[in-house]
Length: 144
Image (cartoon, rainbow, N blue to C red; front, side):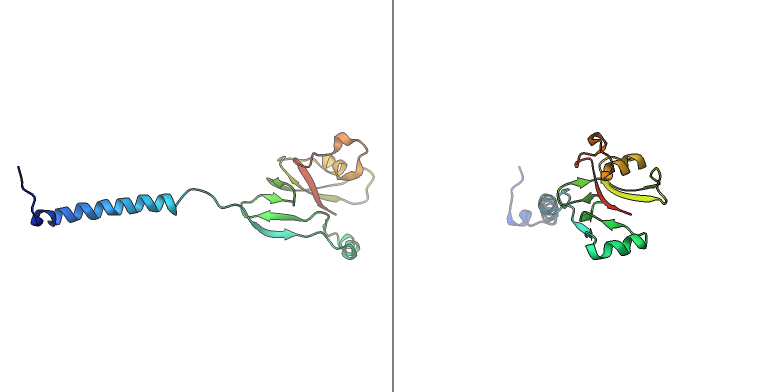
């Protein structure tokens, strides 16, 4: 049996193993503490404020969108109002029956597609409550 002495304990091989073990322990601790896979909460990158009342007429004359609900573009590509989060921002244009020009409706939505007919009816122009979206599905935020 080999006898351990101070010379054996401090040999070159012993220190290589000790350094490698310490490096492995450090990497494991770093992974647990600072390198976790948790994603940061999304944050607002742009705010779309309600169009001030005194600017609405000018927006209509210039065929510009009138924002009726404050909403936010989020850092993860989603959209949000003060109450709900949505996957999509849909800008839906077309001509309503009997209208002289096209209209555009901007919806934040968890539905991938909304037809123009659904959009204009749900904008407040339908007397049938079945034509309206539940606010968790879609929210009208702007129009022109």
